[in-house]
Image (cartoon, rainbow, N blue to C red; front, side, top):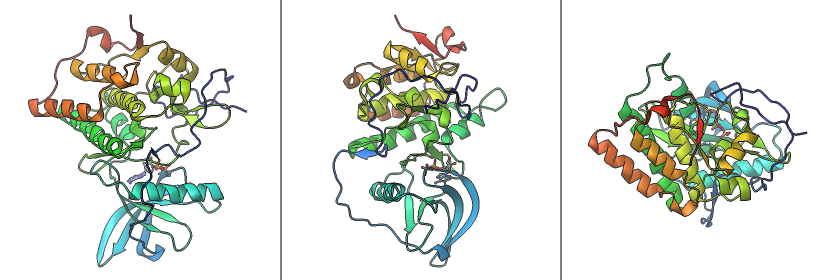
Length: 342
Ligand code: ADP
């Protein structure tokens, strides 16, 4: 009963087109756990403000997440009102989903960084159980980029693109330094604030809305194969180095304004391409140094990829220099989304 999302016809990869194909590949499945995992244990103490539902005004629906609906809300506290995003656990949630929900609260409440979406509180005393997040007014990064894609959109200034890349690398550097492995870093899992700060989000198992980005293996979990390095595809190995590969793919998404990586190729074809060392081509008008950084993130041997610290420093230098302006090689402006290395 495998229902494999097929992205052939949608270069942005958010279609709901599903076409059943036979599963022949050998991905071991290590992905039943939430995909933000921590390799060392925290002290398990929850230090997070608790609110009652009466303090929350539900304003509008923002989307559907793994646990249920996500709403824009207004939180009333000590005479002040703050906009928030409310993740409400659906009423008929299974015991496992409830446990995942609480686990996500534990996990996120340990994180504190400018480029990680901040949980401002929880409402757990009555149903629906809710997580309350800072409100990110410009939505998810993938939608944000698509909305500005030339020629219909105006594009974004080079410095804005560099800042987005820097923000995500900083958040990931923080996660890596705390021994967290995200396992699902992608533009759809980053959010954009009103003042254009990008923060890493989605520590749950939200895979419905972008179903064509995921690949179901042996009828179990959906995997984001287009963001995964060979060692994750082949051996189910997820490490900081595999997050770095995914980060390279996020850079590609940023500079291609939200195209789906390897668009036009089926998930099965993508798996073969990644295994045989075929890379994404440079997005059109991508500065060459930026494409070189992507290629470094896609080194076959995990320890040869740059660290997030290296990446942050490299981008920081470009920002200080006023940009990295070389436009890539001429073939990079073609429509071919992947090419073979020699
Ligand atoms: P989950 O992680 O529970 O699966 P998501 O994070 O995917 O849920 O949320 C679903 C949608 O809600 C997202 O696509 C995004 O547009 C919106 N959303 C989530 N969190 C926020 C937030 N903090 N601010 C604004 N919008 C948000």
